[in-house]
Image (cartoon, rainbow, N blue to C red; front, side):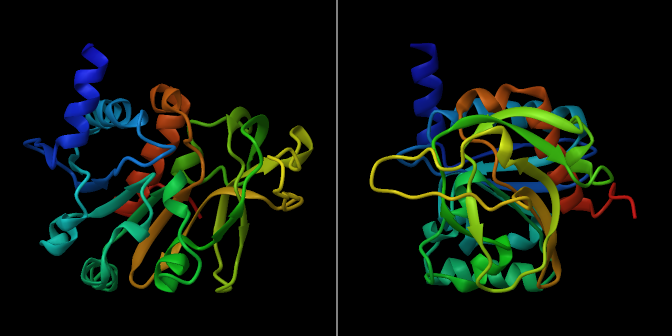
Length: 254
């Protein structure tokens, strides 16, 4: 009952702000429950609150896209947590585009990568890759390809992880900087449901990356399907490193 109560509270809450006297930056987190991603919400929210207290930053948690109609300039970065840009209406999209053009920053996590093809090309370019398909969730080996980026500092060079290994296309020819790649020889890229086909992406299969879009920084992680992941210290270190870089531009070594 305690879990159910906390989950319902997370669903109906419009915003929750953790305020710190010496806050370094302010993060907006948009987390709207959907068919496949909802149980993670109270867990991720609690983990982010702990991280914000430990690392002295402030965050606003919301499941209401109407927040994009307000003053986005107060946020150093906006985090789409398992919530794609499709959830924003036309006016909210324009507000977010303006935010990025004015130097705002973005963090895109897992399901937030998946949008309806062609529905918002600007957002697809912000993400840097377009979702194609994914095989069944499997355990695989993740290779760290950029050891000098903060989102890899808490991750071993070769990391055992279980997730949905998204396949991507690059219709907008966006240049990204890979942080983590999945080793396709360590799982079956073709293991998928009847009637669907997945082929893998070969040697270069990024699952986390960063790049610049408009005048802002963008960090992307395709990892984060299951609720238990939002309790995992290594995964949380991965997210924190990306948030820290997106918000401050610091930590990445040349």
